[in-house]
Image 1 (tube, rainbow, N blue to C red):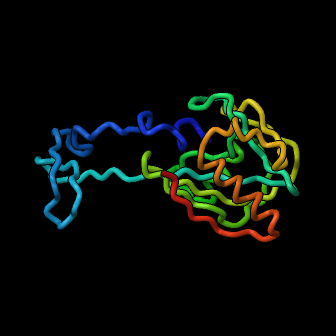
Image 2: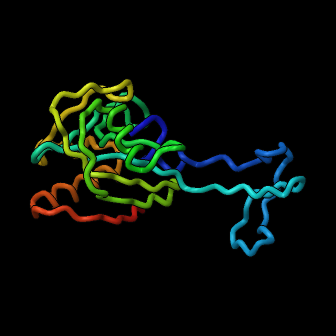
Length: 193
């Protein structure tokens, strides 16, 4: 997964509270908006702008060739040296599928054919939603980017389960191999505590 993204501990990902209005710079106050909202928000007393803090979206793929899946060994923190699926934060101006394909190219340098939407995971403790697509590998040659030490294909028996970087990746891999054994792909909606 890219630079600063999914799987971080809650302590690491704690977002700093908004202190000043992004529009005019005035110190904000926290209160319920007058529009019937039920959550306290950072509201600018000068210009009235309401600032919302929403979950981040992590996008990635499960790149596979036959019964093997491509994993990337992380060259960045957190979880340096551990294995993950290629994924990272979605960027402005791209679709979910475009972001997943971009992350796969950036982290693994893999040639893929995007497949179906495979899993979504709500990771509420860190304010993230993780989305994975299946991606058929068109080649077993990879050209990893700077975030990846090594990109390698693994069968289910070869996966270093104790060295998987993130719970969302572990859960996605379990469902991938279960679907592979069953002979049909499902859609998986998972809540990560």
